[in-house]
Length: 408
Image 1 (cartoon, helix red, strand yellow):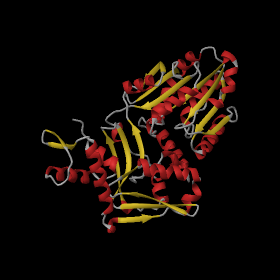
Image 2 (cartoon, one colour):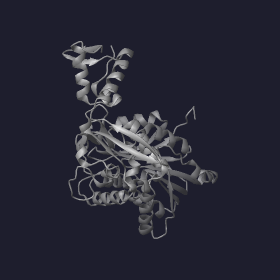
Image 3 (tube, one colour):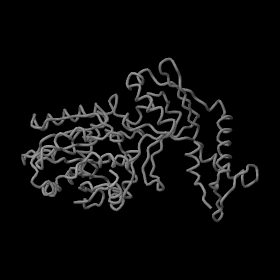
Image 4 (cartoon, helix red, strand yellow):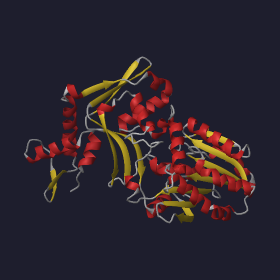
Protein backbone atom coordinates (compact mmCIF):
# COMPACT_ATOMS: atom_id res chain seq x y z
CA UNK A 1 0.00 0.00 0.00
CA UNK A 2 1.19 3.50 -0.81
CA UNK A 3 1.65 5.80 2.19
CA UNK A 4 2.72 9.34 3.05
CA UNK A 5 5.88 10.25 4.88
CA UNK A 6 5.13 12.57 7.78
CA UNK A 7 7.17 15.37 6.24
CA UNK A 8 5.10 15.12 3.03
CA UNK A 9 1.88 15.63 4.99
CA UNK A 10 3.43 18.51 6.93
CA UNK A 11 4.38 20.31 3.72
CA UNK A 12 1.15 19.54 1.88
CA UNK A 13 -1.26 20.62 4.63
CA UNK A 14 0.99 23.28 6.21
CA UNK A 15 0.87 21.63 9.64
CA UNK A 16 3.65 20.78 12.05
CA UNK A 17 5.22 17.31 12.32
CA UNK A 18 3.86 17.21 15.86
CA UNK A 19 0.33 17.63 14.50
CA UNK A 20 0.85 14.74 12.05
CA UNK A 21 2.12 12.52 14.87
CA UNK A 22 -1.01 13.38 16.91
CA UNK A 23 -3.24 12.43 13.96
CA UNK A 24 -1.54 9.03 13.71
CA UNK A 25 -1.84 8.46 17.45
CA UNK A 26 -5.54 9.40 17.35
CA UNK A 27 -6.09 7.00 14.43
CA UNK A 28 -4.44 4.18 16.41
CA UNK A 29 -6.92 4.78 19.21
CA UNK A 30 -9.86 4.89 16.81
CA UNK A 31 -10.64 8.54 17.50
CA UNK A 32 -10.35 9.62 13.87
CA UNK A 33 -11.01 7.61 10.72
CA UNK A 34 -7.57 7.55 9.14
CA UNK A 35 -6.37 4.32 7.55
CA UNK A 36 -2.82 3.54 8.63
CA UNK A 37 -0.05 1.59 6.92
CA UNK A 38 2.34 -0.20 9.27
CA UNK A 39 6.01 -0.96 8.66
CA UNK A 40 7.34 -2.86 11.63
CA UNK A 41 6.47 -0.90 14.76
CA UNK A 42 5.95 2.37 12.85
CA UNK A 43 2.65 3.58 11.45
CA UNK A 44 2.11 5.94 8.53
CA UNK A 45 -0.99 7.48 6.99
CA UNK A 46 -2.03 5.52 3.91
CA UNK A 47 -2.34 7.31 0.58
CA UNK A 48 -6.07 6.97 -0.05
CA UNK A 49 -8.77 9.32 -1.31
CA UNK A 50 -10.69 9.00 1.97
CA UNK A 51 -7.60 9.86 4.03
CA UNK A 52 -7.07 12.98 1.93
CA UNK A 53 -10.59 14.19 2.74
CA UNK A 54 -10.10 13.46 6.45
CA UNK A 55 -6.77 15.32 6.52
CA UNK A 56 -8.30 18.28 4.68
CA UNK A 57 -10.85 18.57 7.48
CA UNK A 58 -8.29 18.04 10.26
CA UNK A 59 -6.08 20.79 8.83
CA UNK A 60 -9.06 23.13 8.52
CA UNK A 61 -10.15 22.48 12.11
CA UNK A 62 -6.61 22.97 13.35
CA UNK A 63 -6.41 26.41 11.81
CA UNK A 64 -9.83 27.31 13.24
CA UNK A 65 -8.89 26.61 16.84
CA UNK A 66 -5.42 28.17 17.00
CA UNK A 67 -4.81 29.85 20.35
CA UNK A 68 -5.13 33.59 19.72
CA UNK A 69 -2.23 34.30 22.11
CA UNK A 70 0.16 32.58 19.69
CA UNK A 71 -1.13 34.52 16.66
CA UNK A 72 0.69 37.59 15.39
CA UNK A 73 -0.25 40.01 12.61
CA UNK A 74 2.29 42.09 10.75
CA UNK A 75 2.23 44.55 7.88
CA UNK A 76 5.17 45.09 5.50
CA UNK A 77 7.06 48.34 5.92
CA UNK A 78 6.51 51.26 3.56
CA UNK A 79 10.04 50.65 2.25
CA UNK A 80 8.91 47.21 1.05
CA UNK A 81 6.35 48.84 -1.27
CA UNK A 82 8.88 51.43 -2.44
CA UNK A 83 11.56 48.83 -3.16
CA UNK A 84 9.58 46.33 -5.24
CA UNK A 85 7.34 46.81 -8.25
CA UNK A 86 3.69 45.78 -8.22
CA UNK A 87 4.49 42.65 -10.21
CA UNK A 88 7.36 41.74 -7.90
CA UNK A 89 5.16 42.16 -4.84
CA UNK A 90 2.53 39.89 -6.36
CA UNK A 91 5.25 37.32 -7.07
CA UNK A 92 6.53 37.47 -3.48
CA UNK A 93 2.98 37.05 -2.14
CA UNK A 94 2.27 34.12 -4.47
CA UNK A 95 5.47 32.31 -3.53
CA UNK A 96 4.89 32.74 0.19
CA UNK A 97 1.29 31.62 -0.14
CA UNK A 98 1.77 28.66 -2.49
CA UNK A 99 5.33 27.50 -1.87
CA UNK A 100 6.22 28.93 1.56
CA UNK A 101 9.28 30.44 -0.08
CA UNK A 102 10.83 33.86 -0.69
CA UNK A 103 12.31 33.85 -4.21
CA UNK A 104 16.07 34.28 -4.10
CA UNK A 105 16.21 37.00 -6.76
CA UNK A 106 14.60 39.54 -4.43
CA UNK A 107 17.41 39.47 -1.87
CA UNK A 108 19.69 41.46 -4.23
CA UNK A 109 17.68 44.66 -3.75
CA UNK A 110 18.42 47.41 -1.22
CA UNK A 111 22.10 46.62 -0.69
CA UNK A 112 21.75 42.87 -1.17
CA UNK A 113 23.87 42.95 -4.34
CA UNK A 114 26.62 44.85 -2.48
CA UNK A 115 26.55 42.25 0.31
CA UNK A 116 26.98 39.51 -2.31
CA UNK A 117 29.88 41.36 -3.90
CA UNK A 118 31.58 41.64 -0.49
CA UNK A 119 31.01 37.93 0.07
CA UNK A 120 32.68 37.16 -3.29
CA UNK A 121 35.64 39.33 -2.29
CA UNK A 122 35.88 37.34 0.94
CA UNK A 123 35.92 34.05 -1.00
CA UNK A 124 38.61 35.37 -3.35
CA UNK A 125 40.96 36.02 -0.44
CA UNK A 126 40.16 32.74 1.33
CA UNK A 127 42.98 30.17 1.24
CA UNK A 128 40.53 27.26 1.51
CA UNK A 129 39.12 26.05 -1.85
CA UNK A 130 35.63 27.42 -2.41
CA UNK A 131 33.09 27.86 -5.20
CA UNK A 132 34.66 31.05 -6.57
CA UNK A 133 38.36 30.12 -6.45
CA UNK A 134 37.65 26.61 -7.73
CA UNK A 135 35.56 27.98 -10.62
CA UNK A 136 38.39 30.35 -11.52
CA UNK A 137 40.91 27.49 -11.43
CA UNK A 138 38.74 25.13 -13.47
CA UNK A 139 38.13 27.78 -16.15
CA UNK A 140 41.84 28.55 -16.31
CA UNK A 141 42.66 24.85 -16.76
CA UNK A 142 39.94 24.58 -19.44
CA UNK A 143 41.26 27.41 -21.65
CA UNK A 144 43.01 24.95 -23.96
CA UNK A 145 40.02 22.63 -24.24
CA UNK A 146 37.66 25.55 -24.90
CA UNK A 147 40.00 26.91 -27.57
CA UNK A 148 40.07 23.52 -29.28
CA UNK A 149 36.27 23.24 -29.20
CA UNK A 150 35.86 26.78 -30.56
CA UNK A 151 37.99 25.68 -33.49
CA UNK A 152 38.24 28.14 -36.37
CA UNK A 153 35.49 30.48 -35.15
CA UNK A 154 36.89 34.00 -34.77
CA UNK A 155 33.87 35.92 -33.40
CA UNK A 156 33.00 34.61 -29.94
CA UNK A 157 30.02 35.95 -28.02
CA UNK A 158 30.17 35.19 -24.30
CA UNK A 159 26.70 34.95 -22.69
CA UNK A 160 27.08 34.93 -18.91
CA UNK A 161 23.91 33.61 -17.22
CA UNK A 162 23.47 34.82 -13.63
CA UNK A 163 26.56 37.01 -13.93
CA UNK A 164 26.74 38.15 -10.30
CA UNK A 165 29.75 40.47 -10.02
CA UNK A 166 31.41 38.91 -13.14
CA UNK A 167 34.47 37.83 -11.17
CA UNK A 168 34.39 34.17 -12.33
CA UNK A 169 34.55 35.13 -16.02
CA UNK A 170 37.42 37.62 -15.80
CA UNK A 171 40.16 35.14 -16.76
CA UNK A 172 38.20 33.67 -19.66
CA UNK A 173 37.50 37.12 -21.11
CA UNK A 174 41.21 37.94 -20.86
CA UNK A 175 42.05 34.68 -22.66
CA UNK A 176 39.63 35.39 -25.52
CA UNK A 177 40.84 38.99 -25.79
CA UNK A 178 44.45 37.80 -26.03
CA UNK A 179 43.45 35.45 -28.86
CA UNK A 180 41.61 38.26 -30.63
CA UNK A 181 38.35 36.29 -30.60
CA UNK A 182 36.08 38.12 -28.15
CA UNK A 183 33.24 39.75 -30.10
CA UNK A 184 30.52 40.49 -27.51
CA UNK A 185 30.12 40.01 -23.76
CA UNK A 186 26.47 39.72 -22.70
CA UNK A 187 25.76 39.60 -18.97
CA UNK A 188 22.32 38.37 -17.87
CA UNK A 189 20.96 38.66 -14.34
CA UNK A 190 17.59 39.19 -12.71
CA UNK A 191 19.06 41.98 -10.58
CA UNK A 192 19.87 45.38 -12.10
CA UNK A 193 21.99 46.15 -9.03
CA UNK A 194 24.09 43.05 -9.69
CA UNK A 195 24.51 44.03 -13.34
CA UNK A 196 25.68 47.50 -12.27
CA UNK A 197 28.39 45.94 -10.09
CA UNK A 198 29.43 43.58 -12.89
CA UNK A 199 29.66 46.46 -15.39
CA UNK A 200 31.74 48.50 -12.96
CA UNK A 201 34.14 45.58 -12.49
CA UNK A 202 34.48 44.79 -16.20
CA UNK A 203 35.23 48.42 -17.03
CA UNK A 204 37.88 48.56 -14.29
CA UNK A 205 39.52 45.27 -15.34
CA UNK A 206 39.63 45.85 -19.09
CA UNK A 207 39.76 49.64 -19.45
CA UNK A 208 37.16 49.74 -22.22
CA UNK A 209 38.50 46.77 -24.22
CA UNK A 210 35.37 44.76 -23.37
CA UNK A 211 32.00 46.26 -24.30
CA UNK A 212 29.69 45.26 -21.43
CA UNK A 213 26.10 44.45 -22.47
CA UNK A 214 23.87 43.98 -19.43
CA UNK A 215 20.34 42.60 -19.63
CA UNK A 216 17.81 42.01 -16.87
CA UNK A 217 16.60 38.48 -17.56
CA UNK A 218 15.19 35.79 -15.27
CA UNK A 219 16.66 32.42 -16.26
CA UNK A 220 13.66 30.78 -14.59
CA UNK A 221 11.37 32.10 -17.33
CA UNK A 222 13.30 33.98 -20.04
CA UNK A 223 15.10 32.79 -23.15
CA UNK A 224 18.03 34.79 -24.53
CA UNK A 225 18.15 33.82 -28.22
CA UNK A 226 16.67 37.18 -29.20
CA UNK A 227 19.86 38.87 -27.99
CA UNK A 228 22.12 36.86 -30.30
CA UNK A 229 19.84 36.07 -33.25
CA UNK A 230 21.47 38.59 -35.59
CA UNK A 231 24.91 37.06 -35.02
CA UNK A 232 23.67 33.71 -36.31
CA UNK A 233 23.67 35.24 -39.80
CA UNK A 234 27.39 36.03 -39.65
CA UNK A 235 28.25 32.62 -41.07
CA UNK A 236 30.53 29.98 -39.57
CA UNK A 237 32.84 32.65 -38.10
CA UNK A 238 30.50 33.33 -35.14
CA UNK A 239 29.94 31.12 -32.07
CA UNK A 240 28.18 31.68 -28.75
CA UNK A 241 29.87 30.56 -25.53
CA UNK A 242 27.19 30.28 -22.83
CA UNK A 243 28.34 30.26 -19.20
CA UNK A 244 26.39 28.81 -16.26
CA UNK A 245 28.84 28.99 -13.39
CA UNK A 246 28.98 28.35 -9.66
CA UNK A 247 25.81 27.63 -7.70
CA UNK A 248 23.35 29.31 -10.08
CA UNK A 249 21.55 26.16 -11.22
CA UNK A 250 21.53 24.44 -7.82
CA UNK A 251 19.74 27.41 -6.21
CA UNK A 252 16.79 27.42 -8.63
CA UNK A 253 13.36 25.98 -7.76
CA UNK A 254 13.07 24.29 -11.19
CA UNK A 255 16.52 23.69 -12.73
CA UNK A 256 15.13 21.31 -15.36
CA UNK A 257 12.96 24.06 -16.84
CA UNK A 258 15.90 26.45 -16.91
CA UNK A 259 18.03 23.92 -18.79
CA UNK A 260 15.25 23.53 -21.34
CA UNK A 261 15.13 27.31 -21.85
CA UNK A 262 18.90 27.38 -22.32
CA UNK A 263 18.70 24.51 -24.81
CA UNK A 264 16.06 26.34 -26.84
CA UNK A 265 18.15 29.53 -26.81
CA UNK A 266 21.31 27.90 -28.16
CA UNK A 267 22.31 27.17 -31.73
CA UNK A 268 23.71 23.77 -32.74
CA UNK A 269 27.27 25.14 -32.95
CA UNK A 270 27.13 26.94 -29.57
CA UNK A 271 28.91 25.73 -26.43
CA UNK A 272 27.72 25.67 -22.81
CA UNK A 273 30.30 25.80 -19.99
CA UNK A 274 28.93 24.65 -16.65
CA UNK A 275 30.58 24.50 -13.22
CA UNK A 276 29.26 23.48 -9.84
CA UNK A 277 30.11 22.22 -6.38
CA UNK A 278 29.59 18.47 -5.97
CA UNK A 279 28.01 16.63 -3.08
CA UNK A 280 30.48 15.80 -0.31
CA UNK A 281 30.14 15.44 3.48
CA UNK A 282 31.90 18.80 3.83
CA UNK A 283 29.56 20.54 1.36
CA UNK A 284 26.49 19.35 3.32
CA UNK A 285 27.55 21.36 6.39
CA UNK A 286 28.53 24.66 4.73
CA UNK A 287 26.27 27.62 5.56
CA UNK A 288 28.68 30.53 6.02
CA UNK A 289 27.35 33.26 3.70
CA UNK A 290 28.22 36.27 5.83
CA UNK A 291 30.26 38.89 3.95
CA UNK A 292 32.56 39.34 6.96
CA UNK A 293 33.74 37.30 9.94
CA UNK A 294 30.46 37.62 11.83
CA UNK A 295 28.53 34.50 12.83
CA UNK A 296 24.98 35.80 12.45
CA UNK A 297 22.53 32.91 11.86
CA UNK A 298 21.06 34.81 8.91
CA UNK A 299 23.39 36.84 6.67
CA UNK A 300 22.11 40.37 5.90
CA UNK A 301 20.85 39.54 2.40
CA UNK A 302 18.69 36.63 3.61
CA UNK A 303 17.37 38.51 6.62
CA UNK A 304 16.41 41.52 4.52
CA UNK A 305 12.95 40.43 3.31
CA UNK A 306 11.74 39.02 6.66
CA UNK A 307 12.75 42.39 8.14
CA UNK A 308 10.93 44.29 5.36
CA UNK A 309 7.83 42.20 6.09
CA UNK A 310 8.22 43.18 9.78
CA UNK A 311 8.62 39.56 10.88
CA UNK A 312 10.29 40.01 14.24
CA UNK A 313 13.23 37.74 15.12
CA UNK A 314 11.34 36.54 18.20
CA UNK A 315 8.69 35.00 15.92
CA UNK A 316 10.98 32.35 14.43
CA UNK A 317 13.94 30.02 14.78
CA UNK A 318 16.58 29.83 12.04
CA UNK A 319 17.15 26.38 10.51
CA UNK A 320 20.23 25.48 8.49
CA UNK A 321 20.18 21.85 7.44
CA UNK A 322 20.87 19.24 4.80
CA UNK A 323 17.80 17.18 3.88
CA UNK A 324 18.92 13.71 2.70
CA UNK A 325 15.47 13.04 1.20
CA UNK A 326 15.60 16.09 -1.06
CA UNK A 327 19.40 16.00 -1.39
CA UNK A 328 19.51 19.71 -0.68
CA UNK A 329 20.73 22.26 1.84
CA UNK A 330 18.15 24.69 3.14
CA UNK A 331 18.13 27.92 5.11
CA UNK A 332 14.67 28.67 6.42
CA UNK A 333 12.87 30.24 9.35
CA UNK A 334 10.54 28.06 11.45
CA UNK A 335 7.66 30.02 12.97
CA UNK A 336 7.09 29.91 16.72
CA UNK A 337 3.74 31.68 16.27
CA UNK A 338 0.90 31.67 13.78
CA UNK A 339 1.67 34.63 11.56
CA UNK A 340 -0.64 36.69 9.36
CA UNK A 341 1.04 39.06 6.88
CA UNK A 342 -1.35 41.74 5.66
CA UNK A 343 -0.37 43.14 2.26
CA UNK A 344 -2.01 46.29 0.89
CA UNK A 345 -2.26 47.27 -2.75
CA UNK A 346 -4.47 49.92 -4.32
CA UNK A 347 -6.52 50.37 -1.15
CA UNK A 348 -7.24 46.64 -0.88
CA UNK A 349 -5.80 44.11 1.53
CA UNK A 350 -4.66 40.53 1.11
CA UNK A 351 -3.69 38.37 4.07
CA UNK A 352 -1.31 35.42 3.93
CA UNK A 353 -1.31 33.22 7.03
CA UNK A 354 1.43 30.81 8.05
CA UNK A 355 0.73 28.45 10.92
CA UNK A 356 2.91 27.97 13.97
CA UNK A 357 5.51 25.32 13.12
CA UNK A 358 5.55 26.09 9.40
CA UNK A 359 8.80 27.01 7.69
CA UNK A 360 9.51 29.81 5.23
CA UNK A 361 12.30 28.92 2.81
CA UNK A 362 14.96 31.58 2.22
CA UNK A 363 17.68 29.66 0.34
CA UNK A 364 18.32 26.24 -1.19
CA UNK A 365 21.21 24.41 -2.83
CA UNK A 366 20.54 21.07 -4.47
CA UNK A 367 23.31 18.50 -4.19
CA UNK A 368 24.50 16.26 -7.01
CA UNK A 369 27.37 13.91 -7.65
CA UNK A 370 29.11 13.74 -11.03
CA UNK A 371 26.73 11.11 -12.39
CA UNK A 372 23.68 13.11 -11.28
CA UNK A 373 24.96 16.14 -13.20
CA UNK A 374 25.65 14.18 -16.38
CA UNK A 375 22.23 12.51 -16.25
CA UNK A 376 20.47 15.84 -15.71
CA UNK A 377 22.04 17.43 -18.79
CA UNK A 378 21.47 14.27 -20.82
CA UNK A 379 17.74 14.38 -19.95
CA UNK A 380 17.63 17.90 -21.33
CA UNK A 381 19.34 17.01 -24.63
CA UNK A 382 22.85 18.29 -24.06
CA UNK A 383 25.85 16.40 -25.48
CA UNK A 384 28.93 16.22 -23.23
CA UNK A 385 32.15 17.29 -24.97
CA UNK A 386 34.65 17.80 -22.15
CA UNK A 387 34.91 17.52 -18.39
CA UNK A 388 37.44 18.29 -15.68
CA UNK A 389 37.38 18.04 -11.90
CA UNK A 390 39.38 19.47 -9.03
CA UNK A 391 41.68 17.04 -7.28
CA UNK A 392 39.61 17.29 -4.08
CA UNK A 393 36.58 15.99 -6.08
CA UNK A 394 34.43 18.88 -4.82
CA UNK A 395 34.15 20.95 -8.01
CA UNK A 396 33.53 20.06 -11.64
CA UNK A 397 33.51 21.76 -15.05
CA UNK A 398 31.68 20.38 -18.08
CA UNK A 399 31.40 21.65 -21.66
CA UNK A 400 28.29 20.79 -23.67
CA UNK A 401 26.73 21.35 -27.03
CA UNK A 402 23.01 21.00 -27.72
CA UNK A 403 21.68 17.72 -29.04
CA UNK A 404 18.85 17.95 -31.52
CA UNK A 405 15.49 17.60 -29.79
CA UNK A 406 12.81 15.87 -31.86
CA UNK A 407 10.12 17.92 -30.07
CA UNK A 408 11.88 21.25 -30.42
